[in-house]
Length: 364
Image (cartoon, rainbow, N blue to C red; front, side):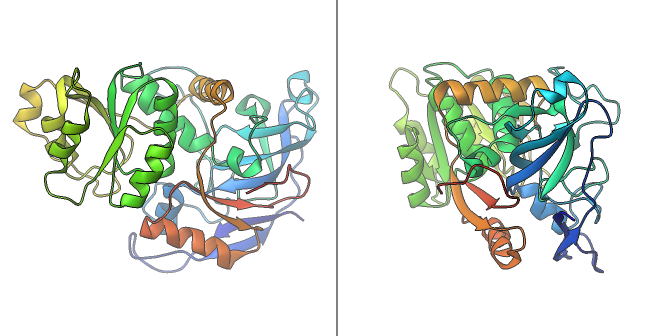
């Protein structure tokens, strides 16, 4: 029977517990509707939500659904419908959630957006040798990407695309956009997308080495946020003809609004796609008087997923990979990936390769 990676329940309070990894066997899935696809997963990637799930800091945690929402694989069987059969033997990436077709405001499904991986809201998790998913929820894996890079794309790419393109209002040549916490998967994809659109991208990090690598990927400049008064240093880097930031794309929270009032233009935008520092942020009258907007941003719709993949193909973009573990049964190496995420030391995505047989071998 196919193998999958889940978490095992142990006693502990949310935020204090850390569920151990567990390999399980599952029945081989078969098409249950005419539009189903059966996919042999070749690679799957971690996201910060997977760490939150192991700490029971995420809604709907369950112990029977495989972990992970990002995956690349080959379609090995289909239902009888032509819309499914056309995918047979093709390499695909999975849309990481369901219930959101194309509404720009949010999911149409009254139950909300059901993200894959270890929750009761979606039966699919990509840390599995074989999965079943509807044909409408896949895109062909970009031909220029190996399995590892393709598996790293879906969730972070979709989140980054919505934050930059759908939410910021500043995905245009010559605009100045600040991306905080460079090194995480979403932040790096925002950088790649924005640079590919001609945006002037500036970044923050706690590491000079990460700033250097971000510049190699197209960032115009960057500052270490641990330095006092870093916002002044950043303003000095901006083009003389545009000495303001048009938008900030942030996944940390914390004191970002205190910095935003000093950096943003009048009417500037903060797009918030995560709050890893704290689940609450301050809001000041300075932000009100400056007409700053705060826009929450989650993952994205099926349409945004397709648009994102098309842009990756058009520009030949490659997700940045930080570290790869080989084999779903290599739990020690997979624990190392989680440790990197806990420490925040990664620069790019953390990926499990060689999950099932038959995929395009990674060169990473």
